[in-house]
Length: 253
Image (cartoon, rainbow, N blue to C red; front, side):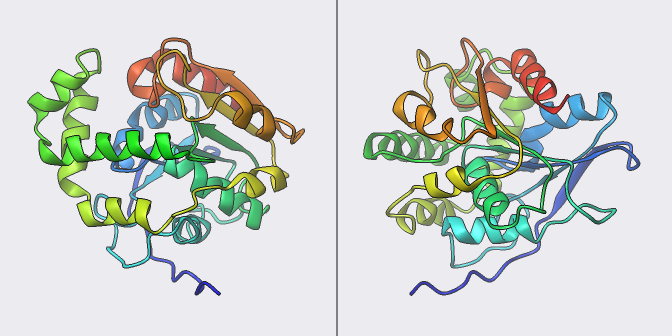
């Protein structure tokens, strides 16, 4: 039987009026809280207080030995709004989406609603190989020039922050996140969700890890809805930021 995860306290960045509705932002593998800035800025302008965390092993977060999805979820469950109570919304991208799904299914009172950005609900061997190759490329050359060459259409802030996030992340932690989750599958948690949940999907014609039969299966849960950001790959907030932000704000109205 797997040991219970031991949570760590996650560092935070915040945007917006502390008196507004409270949203938690959870980033993807190899990123950090700062890279959720597009959502933070947009939510703040809409009257929200947005709080982004660095996940364990990333950014300024504590390092650990445990990088199971259940450990990431335990950290998020232990992250509560500054004013107490439930989060008004949790927005999770990729790994952050999988961990948020686990946290919300295990603790329905943790958030009032969930927005998942191309979430890593189930990773096939092909998906995992693409993720590994992408992470290896990032760590082998984390320079601003390399990020800009790979993503010439990204905003300069995203280019700078992605380069910085790679240098701040533990390569070992990122590798262990793949190795320690030999079966990467939180479909049961998605099926158990009871809070209103909206998936902002990437465009399958570009690259999406939440599409086809997987999306159809998750959408059988009546609390889950979905939209797709046309022309965006796995990180819609960097590929098509205006459309990605609009999709999140629409989901929270």
